[in-house]
Length: 323
Image (cartoon, rainbow, N blue to C red):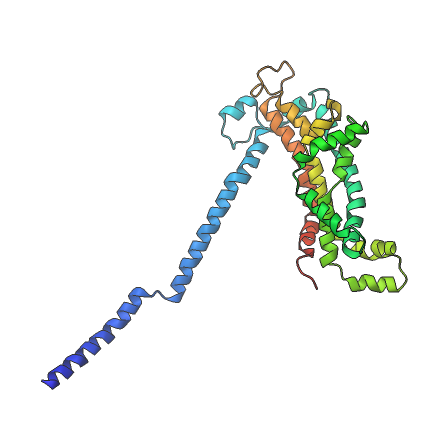
């Protein structure tokens, strides 16, 4: 009897040993197969994100570019992503520039004038101000830094009415300075420069220059400013984009069409499209011409970005680490 029991135990053990590898193979996949599954899931997620990006960002821009090459009837009835013709694009451009005696070209010139002069003043003020906040100690420095942060976080639309009252008090409404002066006030540039000089410029280098007899202005001009090229480009780009794309402030400050920048001018064109305003007269603008005006309005920003992207990337990463 004990012999039979022992034999049964041996047989059961042998049976479990034979079944164990099968069970292990059934419930545990090999490592390379798990890696393949994770890789496939990662590629699926990446493809989904790229497809969503394409649907929400790339396709509308592509439609806008192609819309400028069509007639109004083609825009409505043809394939949304089909190309019209170069001849139609030329005709749309001629019709666009003929609106109010080349008003579009005048609006572009106004935008360039306002944005460039404001940019020069912004760089001349924001870079030294950020350097002063970062490198010097003076009474009220902490309060001034907090005020800069508060103004930087406020939406631009909330400042339009106070700015209008201030500009009206000095009788500058309707002049280019009613746009340039508010554009030049750029607290984000001051704070960005403050962060850069605090984290990316070694204080020992500046201290050594002072010990050699350099004045504070020479330290800033000959040492700190050349090292700050990335952040100067970054502040300049953000300031230019903010000035070029600003709509509400010029709309309030400038009463005449000849003074408008291109962003406000596009709004004027929109009100002259029969599809959106059936009451327009003979000086109507069709939808393909409006699409072309939109492309013209965003092209300068795109060109500036393409030429400045190397400096923008280095400027964004400049304060990421402190040596």
